[in-house]
Amino acid sequence: MLRPAGPRPTPAQASVAQHLSWRLALFVVLLALWSWRLCSPISPELRDGILATGQPYLAAKTAHVVGYAALAALAVGLLAPRLLIGFLVLHGVATEVIQTYVPGRTGQFTDVLIDWAGIAVGVLAARFGTRRRG
Image 1 (cartoon, one colour):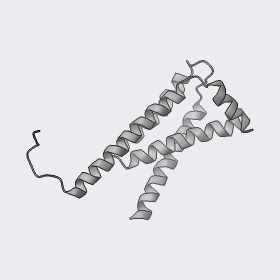
Image 2 (cartoon, rainbow, N blue to C red):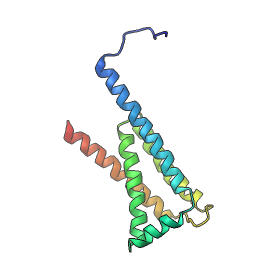
Image 3 (cartoon, rainbow, N blue to C red):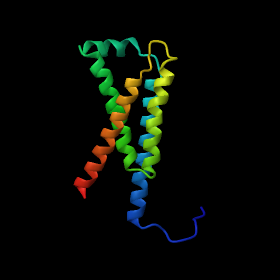
Image 4 (cartoon, helix red, strand yellow):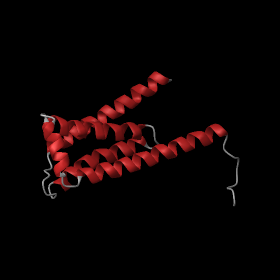
């Protein structure tokens, strides 16, 4: 196997690179699952579960905030976080537009605002957590 010319990375550099690789992989997998869930019809089981909470609007909107907050918090620790956060902002708009064409779903501007609030929560949580650690 050929190795690229130049100095070999230190163990610390290799560890950071591996951590970023796993974090990026997790971000991509979660984004794909989140996109699929947002752009699919709601299954009867999920709808029944949301209705069983007694607060279906709150449960659905909490899911939006938590989903986007988790993705944004992951993005903050990656390379080019501003680009990824910008992508998430556009993703929130795109999924709501797509939902207007999905049976049983409705795309709403208020959901876009809720998605953006989740992104802000995730960014703030990640930055606050980073400051507290070091």
